[in-house]
Length: 164
Image 1: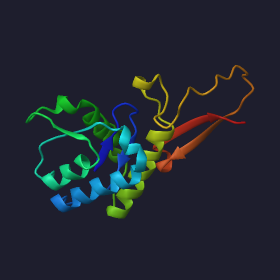
Image 2 (image 1 turned 135 degrees about the vertical axis):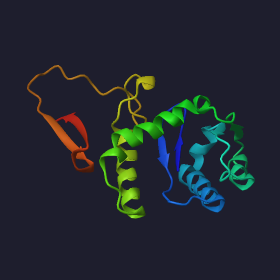
Image 3 (image 1 turned 120 degrees about the vertical axis):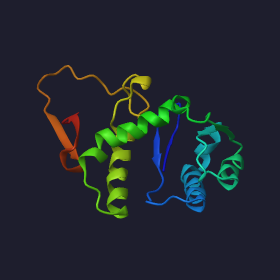
Image 4 (image 1 turned 180 degrees about the vertical axis):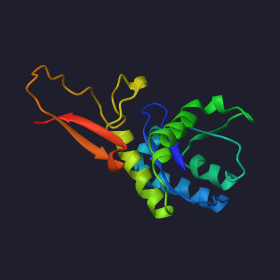
C-alpha cells in the first residue's frame, strides 16, 4: 500500500501483502498516521479510489486527524493521476526488473525504492529537487570533482553524487 503526499511528492509505502483485506488496510492507515506524527497536521485530505478494502474504519483513521476524505469517481484513474503515476514508476523502475521471492523480499525492494525516491530522485514538479530535500544542491563548476555512483537494488537504479 502506497501513500503520496501531493505537495512534496513524498512517498510512503506502508505494507505488502498478497491478499489485502479491510482490516489490513485499516492497520496500514494507522501505521501511516503514527509514522507521520505531528507532520500529519499539514495534510488536509486523502484522495482514494472506491475499492472495497477501504471501509468506514479506514476513513475514520484519517478523519480523526481532521482530514477530508475524497473519493475518486468510479473507473476514473485520471482523478488520482499522481498516485497512478507513482505506482507506474515503482513498477517500471524497480519491480519489472526484480523477481520478487516473498513478502519480506518485496518489503526490502520497496523500502530501498522508497528511500531512493524520497532522498535522491529528482521531481519535475519540485524543480528537480527530491521530496526530502529543502533546496537545490549547490552547483559544482570545478570539473576536477570525481563523480561517485551508488548502486541501488543491485544496480537496477543508480544514484550519482560528487565526491567531497
